[in-house]
Picture 1 (cartoon, rainbow, N blue to C red):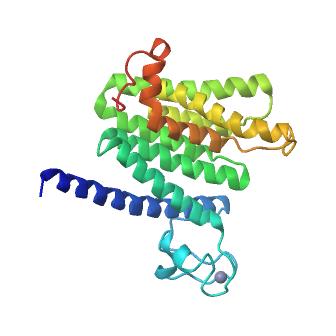
Picture 2: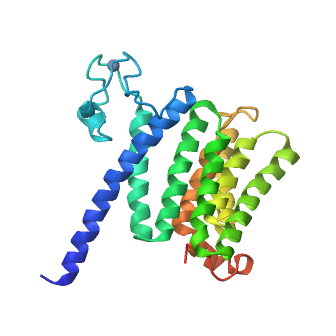
Picture 3: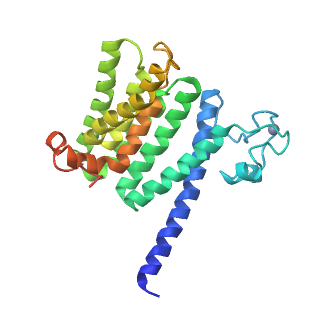
Length: 269
Ligand SMILES: [Zn+2]
């Protein structure tokens, strides 16, 4: 066999591994987010239970993605349907994790990408569930990002701090000018993401996030399915924009090099 067959097999195995790891991460992130929202502690030994009948679930019921499919979305004990959100969070995390692995390979950029992706998923889930982004979970990403920048030295640390400032400052400006629409949770979300990704990706995340939000929200407003006063969780749009930038950021930096400078900055290349 030619050696490139081995590298293809190796690639396929690592994609399968990252799908499995991503689905487990999604399951954990969703469970943690729902326990945080319900004000339950999640670090203790409490076992997961059915939302409907309260029965403690066994290991076989808790295999990410697969259990939901084999049980056809119903609880083994009471037959009630299981919230699709668990399943959705696991699938999104599995696909996103594998795609980020394929994008970056084993590299510092992958570690930053996974941190941004997983924290953004958590913050989006709480925002969708109760319209609230927990400051501590938003800021934790920024703190982690700055810590991960230390090995690369002062320019990388400064880049992270500037990213946090741009992310927070831009949303804060909108809040102060518009007095409504966006909340301080959104500002903290972008502070955390900006601290991890650095100033160029932070600016691009805001841009792409607002584009995605506009593309989805404006037609709903036009069709009167939403009223201007409706509380729309904006965190998921900002988070989606940031995750999109993890894939396409370098291409965007090249196109916008007049504004952003020639290179995307560490760890992106
Ligand atoms: Zn049940």
